[in-house]
Image 1 (cartoon, rainbow, N blue to C red):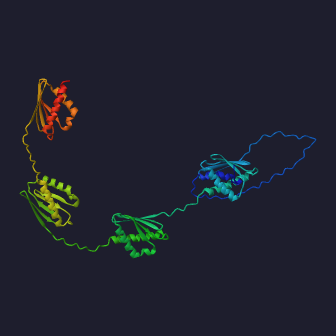
Image 2 (image 1 turned 30 degrees about the vertical axis):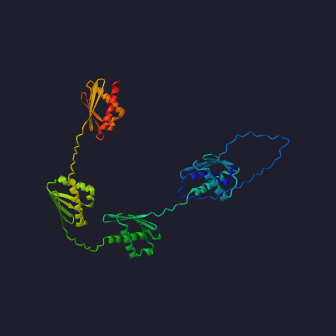
Image 3 (image 1 turned 90 degrees about the horizontal axis):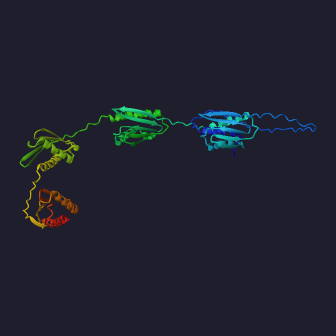
Length: 471
């Protein structure tokens, strides 16, 4: 059992309740000075009983249940109820409040009022019993409860939060572009089009600093990222002053970017014409190069489709389009190429030499494949006989023709060859066969296999055949 100040009993409940609430603003509560009633022991006068006559006992009166002091406190949607009897009280509070919350508050109250000795225990979640000396009047119990409730509200109500001054936003538009300034205490963030380079921004701020000596009044700028700059200054400058200075800065900016630039003298480009002539295979190609343009005359025997196919191959090879090169075919035998004039004519002439070299390679037919006729090879003839039957084979490079008795059916021949293929995997060696007519089988094989090797393999095949038909 734990001891608490007697006048804190009611506060316990309030604590739990208020702790469960998220308090955001301070309530105006008048705090009553706690009244701790003095308990005066009752003096009972002793009366000697009469000896002669026995005392008459009155009839037992029916017990009347005690009516407690019942109070209910509400705060920010939560409720706390106290039933204070003579000698103890029952407190009903929101179960969201923890025992630690209650005990923390009671400790502070005990220190504040220097009250000792009251016993309490937690009956269950949200129910607390407090035992204290008997003899405290109902009125005093109610006063004590109100005082502790007031203390509790102050205990759980946080100090008012001073919200920071909200930022002010100013927007400026000029020439279809927008500049946004967010002003706060001691700092203004400026958002501008991100395509403006950091160098341009720094040049403008240097111009403004030289004009207004911002550094001497504590104004410093920084560029955080493309399109974003920050001005910092003493927080003592009001928003009105900063806003006024910002308007002046934007006006200076508009004047800065709209100043008439000094006349730029563009040097006159000397007109250069380069003529090139190329000949190949009895045909002539000529080109006239001037700044920004090349006109090429080529044999009219070349169709527009031929020209377009060649140019497409060149574009894929050199990515001419990305360099700004374009072409048209205004008439048969004429192609006009345009290119940026920043490319000088000499460079174009060198590139044209490369293009013509590619063209010659493109139109030159591939060398004809000369078929080499190998001298006729004498065939290798093999004859075999078994059981009165004869088999002959003629071996040439890449082919073997086998003649066998026509008594053997096509199905018989195919069954035997299938068995051989399964045994030696002839197909993987490139061996194929056909049965062009009854009694004739033709085997083909890679010519890289010489006829002597084929003859030896044929001997093996015939040996297998004899074993096959002897089963």
